[in-house]
Image (cartoon, rainbow, N blue to C red; front, side, top):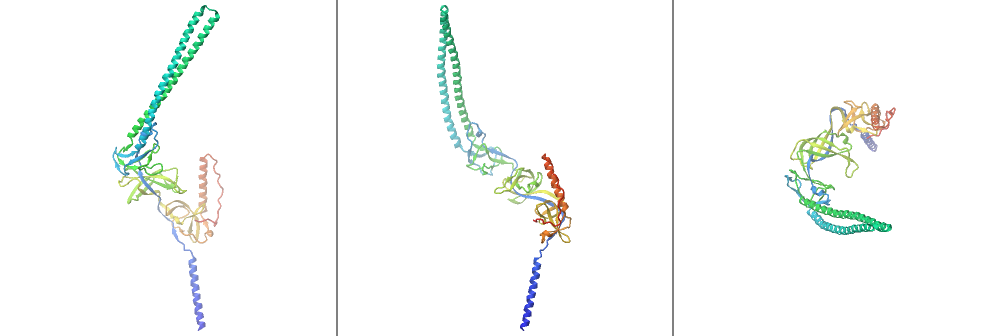
Length: 457
């Protein structure tokens, strides 16, 4: 009885061991998932999010009088504003600028004008007094000359020495008279210049007051035409509001957009920007009205990128014109944009997940009798599929998941790799030649390895 129990227990243990071993062997095998290369249509798309704005708009700016040369006000605050989004007629109130700043500057300008007026009167009095003294001196010098002339005439019958002395005295007073005449002319010019400067200063002070009075009358901003009021942003990127400062350097208070011509301003990352071209068709949807489908086209692609906030990545501004007019569309609405960068009707395509790559080439795992690593020449791709230029044929089976021991799998299609390398070298040569440099010397021969170690994706 005991022996029979031992046999039963031993048999059960062997059965359990065989079940465990078979299940383990089965689970250790990697299931191969494949798909076929097909020929068909494919659209290459770039998806972005944008914001609506008018393609053209009329700017509402600070009064031109603020830029007056004599005003001296470089910044002024907004004291009152119409509600954003209001629809206004031409001449309707938009905003009021701070009158207190003008009043303070105007009071100071009037005080300066009074001082300038006093300075002008002082300059005239000083000039009259100074020139009066010089006129008396000039009259005295003229009298001295006449007196010496009489002495010379009376000494005609005197001794030669007396005559000589009389003539010398006459010449001396004549020289003094000439010096006094020149001194009077100089003082006259100096006095005139002093009065002119004071007069000019007074004129500038009066002109400043006139410009300030005109500016004071222009502090109420009105709409130049009919439209919807959209407020601009200040130099810090904040929407204009009561208390915001505006200046001649940042003059735009608001805009009146042309609602009949809207654009979506969006930003494309540096990886996809090379695909974007003017004229490409775009499908748009509005987040506020998801049921609406709009069409448009790319009208502008920035040449220079800009960094994304808190990131090292760069983006490029792209503008998309929205076709047609819809009264529901408003500035600042968010849009979802699908830019069609390429459309093919009859090309070989494979799932993008089946493509592997390393630093030098791209390849797939091709299933024939066994599995080989096939080098491929690929074209455009969208979020799901990639166009195959060379290396595969319609109906070929490619493997999604990486096989076991990929380093031991044979690599085929090295002729495609050679062609790609020659193409790259030719492109480099053209670039160097266009920059007036010596052309790049071609590398002779390309190493070929049937089953070398290739890094995988």
